[in-house]
Image (cartoon, rainbow, N blue to C red):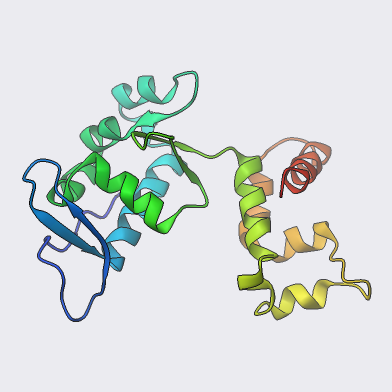
Amino acid sequence: MQVDVNFAPPSFPSSTQPIALSRVHSVTRASVAMGEADVARVVQQVEELLVSGFERGVPALQREAHQADGFLPIASLLHYSPLGPAVWPFGGVGVVADCLRARGSMVVELSGDGSAVRKMPLRVQLRNQLEFLFSDNNYHRDLHLQLLQDEEGFAPLDQVVRSYAQLSQLVDAARGPAARRAALVREAVSSSA
């Protein structure tokens, strides 16, 4: 897997890219600012590393990732992956945590103290996707979802899952009999607020 490490140098802000995150560099103590594109790129690369099974090729990461709670220290992720050199100009471990807090992720969970990450369980990813689909921010703009509803305002979950590629991929990733995948969807819905 190839990870893009072409970040702009930390000489922001520029008039073309608004500041998305300002912080003090953990080593140099200089103020650095990251544009929205840089924050998005950090989050995307962390997601790709965790989702694509990065640990297969790096024994040190493999050991770290198989701890009881499943969290991988961000310092290890930066040390053993191409993400590290790209993030260090902005400050290291804290940058990844700040980017995940600022932008959020549908597949990466940040530990409470902000020092480690893990891939969210499928049930949680599925719940997050469903909550987004039916959120006020999305629902009123999503004509397809509105068309799936019956006259009482209910949308059949099987049709919703089949209609949206991300949901369908998450359910297919569960592997196993159809009953197990259906149970995963029911569990995701029942765990929603």
